[in-house]
Length: 345
Image (cartoon, rainbow, N blue to C red; front, side, top):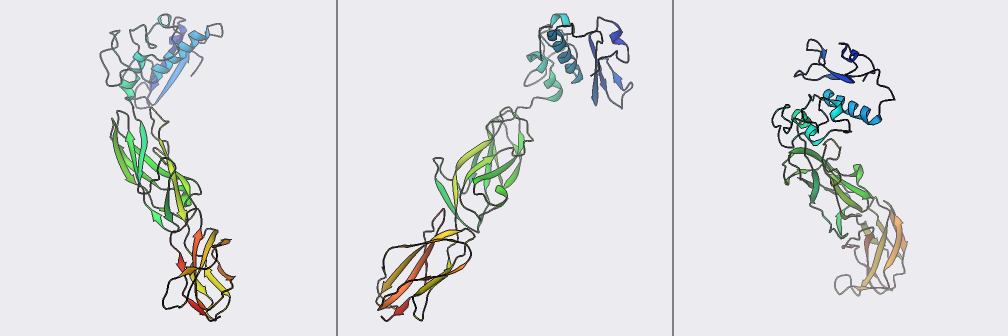
């Protein structure tokens, strides 16, 4: 934009307050203020150099907006309600484009010399009505009231992510499943939908697998994750759901000292610093009989990936065994059980 006389000298006439040149290196002349059909590579706007601060701000705003309309490829319109009306005196109160300057949402109608016809910016660049909304995912889906779905540490899950397009134009979408709180590595899985049909149509894609190595976290799915699609509503791209909890691996190699001695131990197999619940059981013989619990549950403090040995006073006679489970964000329903060891007295 220049505050100077233009190359063709149009602004030497004080009647003209501004002029716009549309330019393309393949045309002759390269830049011209003539209303010609052109594939615009760039535009140059020149404003009347004699139009100083004494000109009302409202008039200057209308002028600049009008010339920007030319820079985008619009010609003059005969409708005095249009920003692109050719006489500034007729539209000086307009501070931006009007509906007739924007054009019909469905097509281009009529000609520019009939005041009721519409030739707007949508006729040049199209009407982009897209509204992408994340609406579903599977297979792990807690309830919206905050329920928890448990998965095991060390496993992986592939999610199918679903998007709806509430707009009238089909569009593609990059979709991502994300986890708040304690997250899996990388924060979730991403996939791309080539095209989501318009008018409430849906489409799905399968995200890259998520590996579960951490504790639980809240879940959400985001349509147009990388923000490349212009939408009429950018506020509904995200679907928030409940919580997915990751249960730590149970310990392994649970043993009661077979000497016998007053010791038992196990290997913590989880990368999570989790606590442990221990139950000691007894029966009269190691070959038969009903196991009964001895004393109360034993709670052991968190440890990670270690071999641990604990003291316990096994009072015979009888056969004893130890059962252990991890006590992380999600408790395993199963317990790992040692072999029975007989203590004579």
